[in-house]
Image 1 (cartoon, rainbow, N blue to C red):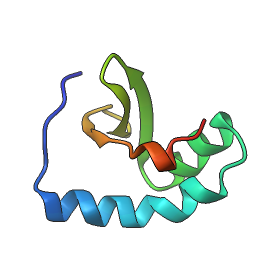
Image 2: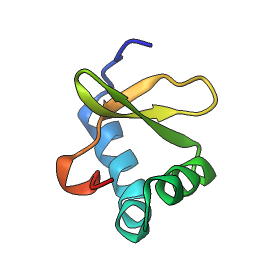
Image 3: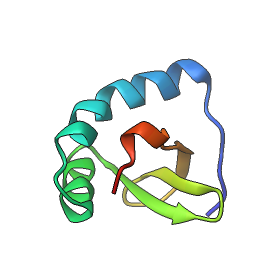
Length: 70
């Protein structure tokens, strides 16, 4: 899938939505389940870890390094 940039406002709102879940995650699998409940996922790419939509896997934005510790 290719990265399709969104407007900055939408990206900031999505990151606000998932930030509490990212901070609570205890492992990569836990993170994946927490994001799936919100309709998101992640994929490791050559450009780094990307936040994606479920079920289509459209890349939304790179995940902030401070929030992608797994």
